[in-house]
Length: 269
Length: 312
Image 1 (cartoon, each protein chain N blue to C red):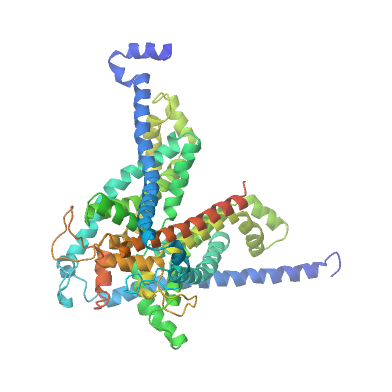
Image 2: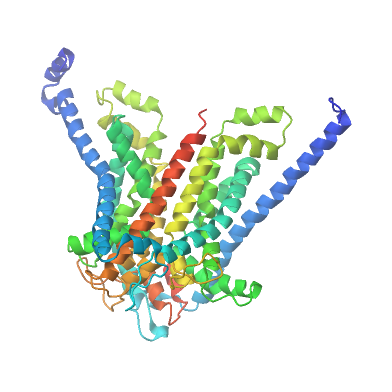
């Protein structure tokens, strides 16, 4: 090729390079559709296997030795109660910690330690939280295998996600609004009342995001409940203090073995 | 307290509660409450480390660290007990490796496609759906691996056992594709527009711009996405517990059944082991190893992110 390309060569090169573009678009689309196809397959499979079993009785019956009469009431209530404890503990603490780190914290080594901690906690496998629950809540604190232990552990598990979500939402609030709040003498420090009055009113469009994400991780993370040994499915509604607690994820796992795939739908629902 | 504020407070009379000093004071109290909330994160870390080290210390009174690291068998619940962590580590690494072989290429290509090629509308439709894929409870993925992927693989590879690391790894890989894709895509979109414009002006096509300008520019974020994926794959529990079998085997062959660290912890905590027994303590030792493994990857990721960080 000569040092200066002719127009013809240039065009040929360009169209060749553009062909790679098209190839990549096709590749990208294929892969994406593949992933979405798997998701569809997953749902279709659950619906197909579970549809016949899904109904009011399934939700209101206790687990039974007879597969056709089994329901998920106790597991359903157990999951709901654990979620309640988790929400009550983790939302206030997580949001408060997020506000502190974003609005108050001075830039020093101490804040640095807290921030590194939050980042690291988000990367700790959930089963390690399960070990924490087993060692600390169940035995050291004597909470036993209970909704309380499980709920507290899940609260710790999703805490980093709530903190990060809160901070991102707060960060999205323009500085001008903060300054306006201070200027309007709502608060001379521009922090607490400034935050509450101005920032809070602006952040909620983003805030719901952190909660669903956290909830997803929580509902999926049943391995830690396994560590609190909540695997028995008694035919009674769970209490807050030590009794063994049925939980949806566990229900699915217990059924594994004497195979009743219909349970999967209930857990999905 | 400044003179103005005092005058104002006096002028407000009844409104003393809203005086500047009162509000500053209250702000201080609230700051402390919020600080306490932030410290919960620190205490959680301390508690995790304490519990793991405390119970592992009891474990290592019975088992020497040398046996723990060099013994080729892991049979803590048998009469002839062996405590070599290596079979569990090999299982964990193999499953993680298979998962990454799926997740990294697929996740990166999807991210490049969504960030550089897809229309705005397409991106806004596909991203939430992909994130849904990452939000399916992992138990469901476990049964997906066991009941659908394994039978399919058995047609391709005759003689594949019903429990195997390959199918578990593939499904975990699929599971973490959305995380890798989503985080890398965010990083790529943070690369400023003028860099792309500059590249186009030089005659580069979209793909060339994507691969030679955007990806290098977003490398720190992409590295973070990979590390996130690795951490999730190492820590994944339900899929391996259901689909990979529970038999600790020292092997790196993905078509064999094996147990991972997480699967072992699940297996033991399912049983009714008394809480002072060596079996009970062994899950904390296994947990400690797991924690150290993720810590190493997180540290590597931390330094990679720093090394490749591009400031715009």
